[in-house]
Length: 280
Image (tube, rainbow, N blue to C red; front, side, top):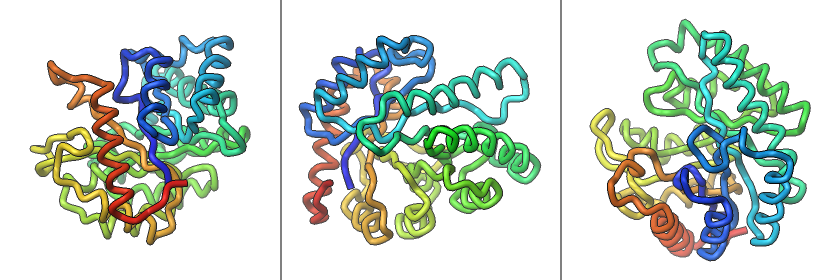
């Protein structure tokens, strides 16, 4: 396993600064965020900028395990849906252009919707996810669906059912354990269910029980990363453990995106050492 950092926690930080800071801390890779309001929003990435970002990653010896293109797949307005698919499929194209080495980045997304809509909307969702997975397959890029508290897919059982319906090797899971921890699911049960089908991960820290929960920077809360890492290793996961800082944290008046990346690295690197797990 390796340690990554998501630029989700750095919406206003120039990519040059982000890459340099992440590399100097010792991270093995980063997840690039391409949604609106970010300095790397997809529409701003012309051919020259894509080439420059690829060169930055290579210069700083950072892998690119994932691209965060989070866009709802349940939008019913045709124009909005077209825009969302443009971003998701554009993320697939970007993954091919920015790939560092032979392994292509996954394209991460959340599904949208609400938990109570699952039975009524799952086939509709599967049809749209299937279209996206087919596009990913045409370019050799895997789509990573992230179960998310409050979304239509909010449990391991639902995302496993989606994988079964779509039935594509180019659809896997972006496993963010925080969304299960805050509803009282144990590390053992969620890792056992999702590690075997996950291509990428997110970790935060968290406190409390949904809906009265608080997402935190890794190291600020009680989450047991050592136990989590041992469970992930035991269930065969060998990819990136990527720290993500939520919008909830970013709303703090004193939020410092570079300091958040630093604390996240210190927390995860220490956990790897304590777990006796070598990176790489």
